[in-house]
Length: 180
Length: 151
Image 1: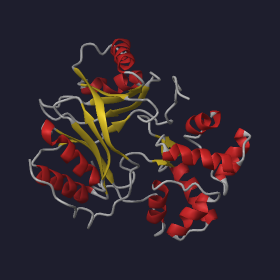
Image 2: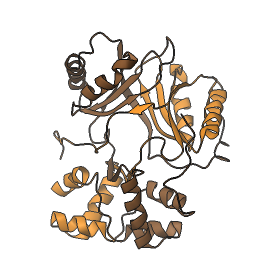
Image 3: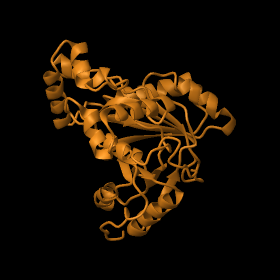
């Protein structure tokens, strides 16, 4: 994790407010870009220009309908992890990514013996048995049978929301709970 | 009904950047703008759609981190709900593992992140497994839907 300035994307003082308005969801009105522009002090044309620029420079990876997959019947959501030798991670990942049922694939740090895994992928499916067979297919197809692995199905979703820009101070002054 | 499925599946990326995106979509689908807006409202109301918005790469605005905690079963619900209430947390799932609570924390910079993580650890008395992203291999092209048995 490294400190990342809010640029190169936020070049205008109104940009954080525009981004926040966008992440709240595009309103369902005939002129939605004019509506979010009002919250940030931008005109409709300026909003469209800013979003086009963010899409071009990569801040916006995709713009569109964001579905709740659990609600649409995708309840078998598996995080599959492996402990792959460091010099084999990129190759393993590129094989994994070829499977259309894999939605995300990441490398993350190992954390000692309690978390020895460094390669993560996500599979979302309708039913658990099918996802389990897809995982077996993946492990055999990518010749990953030798590496330690674990599958963590999600059983409950407590929160799913778009990433927001949360300013640092004042945000962590929330109600407290009993320590365990 | 077909318009609902098309709205869910065909507009996950490249949403029109014109002054009237819903009218553009309506034109493409051969329906009216009102029909598109009504259908989208229904999909938001029945929680099929989280929002119409942007997916941004991790660590592009501020910093983000995947966090996991091993929460005692009888405390899970209470702690999960409290974690979800933090504005910095945007995804929060229970998973089948000793580390049973998995959530994503977003912060404006590293100091803010450290503060949030320390606060969660202090309030819950539980240690957080910190799993920042080191490399992303897959490009998010949206979520292709199969309408198995769906109406």
